[in-house]
Length: 353
Image (cartoon, rainbow, N blue to C red; front, side, top):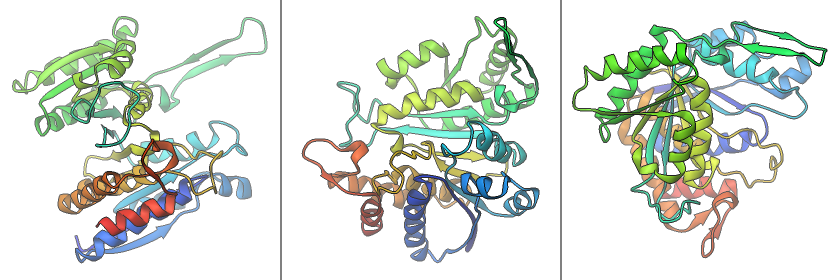
């Protein structure tokens, strides 16, 4: 590919700040490789909702379908009631564009402090394969009978053989290119129907991959082992809700939410790339956000949507060099390091390229 048609949704809060640095790095690495970047900005998020009442118009969704990739900063603002933007923008993007694979690599970078005593980058290197289009987030059912002391609320979780099998197969394929281990995380002792579907599918697919070792953890046990034995995990496959929670737990292994990128992919490799952190309205506009998760998301975009692993590796190497120099944004600052702001960190990665 010689031209990338990129949809940019900077969104809310620090989204605009970190996306600017991600684009800066993308432009730098693409210029040396002869790749032309054509960007289209989309105003989606709190600003648009507060001005027009719109979340994701059908016309915008149609345009996004025609783009090669989407770079998203963050969605969310206290001026909008909770759930409006998540269900109005984020979830429709995933469901309508069939982003069934949500990849969240968890990697401790050399020199970055982790709250886990004695753990090193060799111990913390996994990827969470989260199913992205099913589970309780689909909003397909449930009831709320409120207004009394006996208020009752139910939520329906949708799990299909088709959806489960394709994320499980993806996890095994990824494990074959890594350390050869897949761990299924669920809660089969309580969620007996969905748990049975996941466990049976996992077992059947595992039989096709005899060289890959397997493991199973209940989600509560996995949360504990993430913090006590992170070296136990290579590829973790799980459902939408558990993957959401576990990857946030895993983020702290790397020192900060600001260090974790993600990719949401369809079956053709087209997808949306975003840091896993939120819009962080409390620090928006202060210039202290960590752009590395967004910059690393750009590397994932080059790897998966453009099949340009060499360009992705260059960005990864540049981030390594910057951290080796001791540069830190406030969220990962430690004694003896040099604190820089969001823009300076982006500039440093460009210089390292």
